[in-house]
Image 1 (cartoon, rainbow, N blue to C red):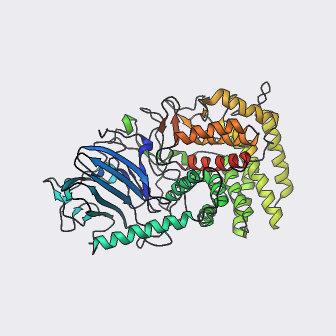
Image 2: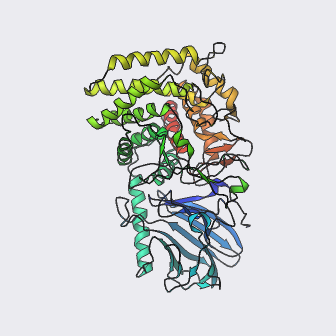
Image 3: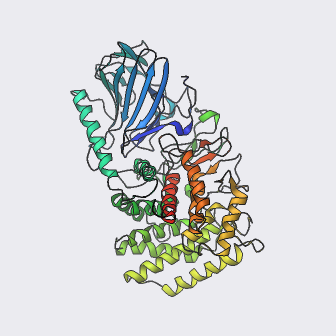
Length: 596
């Protein structure tokens, strides 16, 4: 087996501890990792630059085969590796140190790598430990009694078996025979020796497996594609930042939306835009704690009366959103520039008001009574909708060209007022309901008069852009129009005609002010499945669902986009949007198909 320079984006396994994650390829190489938390500077970034990024590899020389899999119902990763001289089972995980998912000390965590020799005598296991903290800095190693310590950065490597390091201290080997097992622990945030390493790691892997199994056991879904939905739920849980409840869009930065292109963005933030989708997926599945923590985090971000409302937030109080380029990295498969931070934070996206209110509405209909603080937030946003809905914005897709009257933004303004009225009246809160109802009706009429193509009778991207936009597929799902309204039937048909490629859907195809092209957008394809299912076009929806399931990685994970021609994963990985879309589409389609 040849270890290619860049691995396919969706070939990676993902492990995590609810504070950060690591991406591990089939050759046993950790190619992405930021410590101690998701938005920290990278220590391993080989996925963005094979020479300057840094990695940590455990493998067999002259590898002939390998197979990644998750231990059932967990985010513990196993890799069965073979060579001509022997075989090993490599198990990778990040310990969940406490039953509630917290760390003992917030800045201290671990990556554990268990190596069991399953075949062979005195076989050599090769290690390459080459961290490059702070986005590619060179470090000085100190081969101390602890194993291998990085002087300038608190990363320590400890092993239950002797490692023979080369003179440089970067490459080492250990020797195992059939039945032997070794434990390697990478600690970050401290350099304290772990006593009785084997017992400690055996306890950690047991506790970590128990944590994931107990967590997944809450899942209420029993229909078709249950295992697929459970894996998506486990992936979403990896993106939840335990200290605040925020849920990331993705744990990676600058994986390209087009190979060799410049559409490379940092997604290690939490977008308010995702809020309704997140709660709409988690609550029906039974994951109430995550929904509650996320809802509380949303409420904690309530702006002051006259302050602007950012569309995305850092996961802690430290603002890491400033968009910067990293010229030291060449980018995945020479896709540059590599960016950290995200300038979309300062865009005007009117849809976010409706998405936040809709998420809190979903929270209330699952039995959570709104208090005065939540209502104050809802009322603030509803009043902002009334004052601002007629403005142009950058829209859900964060275009970097001229602002427009995007249909989806108007749709979500309507949703926001509709849900605010329902919450307020049902729970006895006070507000200017007649004004809200009047504006809600005006927005509805505006969309039908100004955002519908008068000839083909479908929802356009905007009055300025008389083309299809996949976000409009959500209109019947959100209750704006009945699924079988002629406008919605035409909207679905025009989306397929204008935006689909081999049944996969682009967000849009008109100019957005950026260079290059992108792939089909996975969540948009899942939205098409939902819309078709709601219209009773179940056979068509089922065919597209089967295609999307075939496009999942071997581990059941999805990136943001797909190259329709090459069936190649594109964009950041794993992507919350894609897994949320899958959960919602599968649930609706399963219901429409009837009992399996």
